[in-house]
Image (cartoon, rainbow, N blue to C red; front, side, top):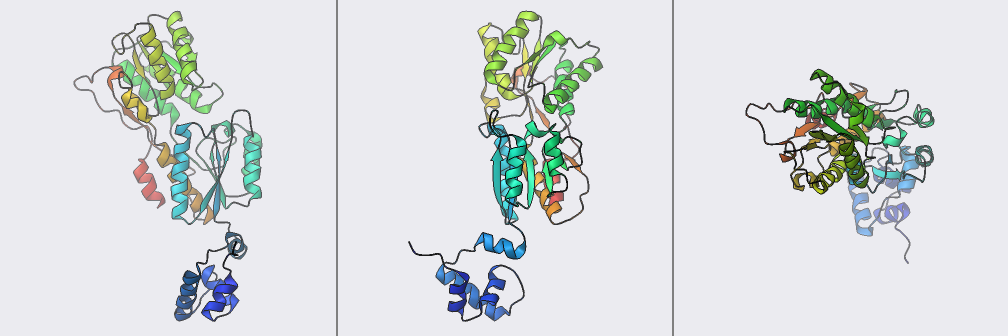
Length: 358
């Protein structure tokens, strides 16, 4: 196997010093235009590929950002990472991902690994870490950090969606259509998003003059099979339910299956609404009313905020709220005449946020 082309090889071909060649190929200084052209031509002829490690010693940047991610098998949790990676490439950076599974590495262990690699900044896309005090302490003051979830103690910029507003939006949609016995299948109780969506659900019921009933809440653990079982438990306990809010679309699909097995028609006998607007939501039977969360755009905006921090540019706000939008489909019935479109749950659109960070 032939050895890689080195800076010395390029310098020799261009007929200039190693130091001058290094300046041109590592963006390390000013060189006469004619000399620059000669060096770049030699590099292209020889097929020179820059040595990232050597360049980092000169620029004091690894041109890499780290991502602490959740379970990579969940498609929805991958979407912010796609947005992050695309934005990182625009800034000439690579992305190093450390993922957390349910029984494997902790957020702290993954974070320490990224810090040891001297990444230029870190983005947390890991709801498991949102109440981890050790992770929060490890992050502060070490390197630029942005999160897509709340961080214990605050002090770290966050790009996320107002989950309380999501719970309000969903439940108001159901109460506006006359439902009063509204159940909900929630995610894991230790998650901030679960508690916030549940709080929004509770507030909207009270606004409609309905006393929240704890018997109408069941845990589905974000899982289709768990939600199927939760749906049966909920209907066994409260057969007079007329609508159910599943806190994500995966659980809503499990719920639809439970309703089908019980011979209950959707939405005539029980309306169903989910959250996230995953691609299959439009193809369930009936198509699922849901809330579109801009997860891909959240990743892009989080990356732009991180590069602002890396460049030591001041942030307009330590928090950016990405708006969610209700997507009305057949699982909650046909639109009523005069129905108003639900306002987005958030302070700015993804397009506005991306434009502002550009």
